[in-house]
Image (cartoon, rainbow, N blue to C red; front, side):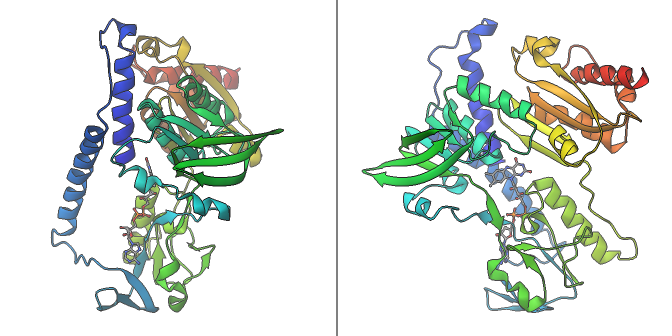
Length: 413
Ligand SMILES: Cc1cc2nc3c(=O)[nH]c(=O)nc-3n(C[C@H](O)[C@H](O)[C@H](O)COP(=O)(O)OP(=O)(O)OC[C@H]3O[C@@H](n4cnc5c(N)ncnc54)[C@H](O)[C@@H]3O)c2cc1C
């Protein structure tokens, strides 16, 4: 919610600056950073207050304390109390990972937590990483006129997406002035009179970049170190709580859900895992298992990039046969109205049955559009069924009918 609120503010400003495209006169558009942050804080507070009310509603007992296991059925709380229970669900989330290179420690970098609490903007910023957190902050700061350099180790940003989606994002980033380096290997880092420097290998070149601040976005790790899980007989692997697909840990009465299991680090997955754990505790005779067939990932950049089910990369890696078809937003009515010509939608289908097995979108409101594919996949629809489904014109959503028709024809033919 906080990062998305900031990105929305950045997008409003960006659209205003492009107002002339639609004949809108908006001169000297700028950002009032304290107001941008204050609006985000107010929105988060409203949201959190509501959640807190729900917790305090009396439906269950809410204790505010840090817990650690004393034995398999007992928790020691930071309040000094002791708590015993028949069952437990561990959901202690994640923390920012330790820097993979020891010399980064001396940089005194900021993480997403500090970035969300800044009171003034740095003039320049180096972002380490190329996942969702990195790309979302990169675009936010760049659109607020911070000179942003993004350094990613892998060959593309958003490494678990197909390359075509990452290419769209990198293209827009470069056009908006973000200095994007992919396929890098960081070699050293230093801090001198308020400036921070990072040196890295980029292909055959040795590059050094410098900025006022560095944002560390190289990943998060399960927050389990202080839980004394061994005392409860709960097995971990590199800090993550190991569970089966019922979200049961190695101690049969203890379950885990969310980032502490390091499965996906996504809110709705944490919620689904928590619900599965609760279900399996209360109704063990009707076991509920996690199924990641509809796995969805979204980066709320502009263009938004989103995927559901299989990517082409994953299908190839798992040797799953597929047919794919794409349609470009540059060739679509509603996106032309919006002057949002970047990107595409893509469908993957089972070549024998036509069942939709994956969808990808890099484009306007991609995070919303992907939900049509989640719904279709949830109901195991075929491309022919999706193509036959009525779509209003002109909408962004009707773009799915083009790759669906193309694949339906191929599979029929
Ligand atoms: C910058 C950023 C942007 C993100 N954007 C998105 C997004 O757009 N969409 C999305 O799906 N996901 C996003 N995520 C990931 C998402 O926030 C996490 O996947 C989600 O919060 C995980 O939920 P959780 O319940 O496992 O952990 P958390 O939400 O981290 O909750 C863990 C809770 O456990 C408490 N706790 C920890 N240790 C103890 C202890 N010993 N005793 C008692 N309590 C304890 C903590 O205080 C905390 O309240 C983002 C993450 C970051 C950092």
